[in-house]
Amino acid sequence: HMAVTKTDFFLTGSSDGHLKFWKKVAEGVEFVKHYRAHLGPIVSLAVSHDGAHCASVSSDKSAKVFDVVNYDMMSMMRLPFVPACVEWLNTTREAQLKFVIADATEPSIHIYDAHSGTATPLHTIQVAKPLTQMRYVPNHECIITADVAGMLDYFSCSSYKFPSEVVKFKFKMDTDLYALAKAKTSVSALEVSPDGEQFVTT
Image (tube, rainbow, N blue to C red; front, side, top):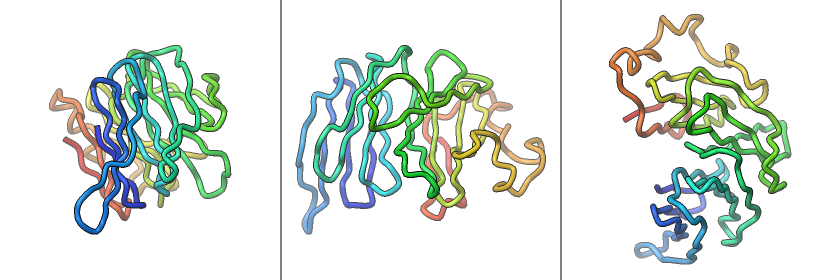
């Protein structure tokens, strides 16, 4: 797994649980920090929109939060479930630093305070099926999700409901959100364009 920040850092997470920090320099890339972050494979890695924080989750049921610029671990938590993916969830109206973790086996996602280090979620959202991917769209303050059946969906970062005030369609059947599910395939990767107006799946 790899995540790139606005601050010219990129981070790599591997199947042996190791997390590495790299810095883009004038000529090439410089290695800056190594963490033996997890006992199991890192299954997902995410950086905050401002590039200041990184979150990693592992099949060993742990989640860790890092300060990217200072290369420090901020908090860690032991999860009561095996995580599938992690993403940052912040709005311009909130000072609290939050991130969301999807359960790999149950149709639920859990929102946590990144500073607290406690595994008690601030909020839990029930979804149709377990998720495989999540991506934050900062200009619309919503999350795009993909589940194990290939279904794409959205939820608001403030109300945690479908962001009807953001999207331009009334019915999902009028879109291609069901296209992958109809093809009986699932999403292995999901990325949002820098302007937040488009996304791509593989």
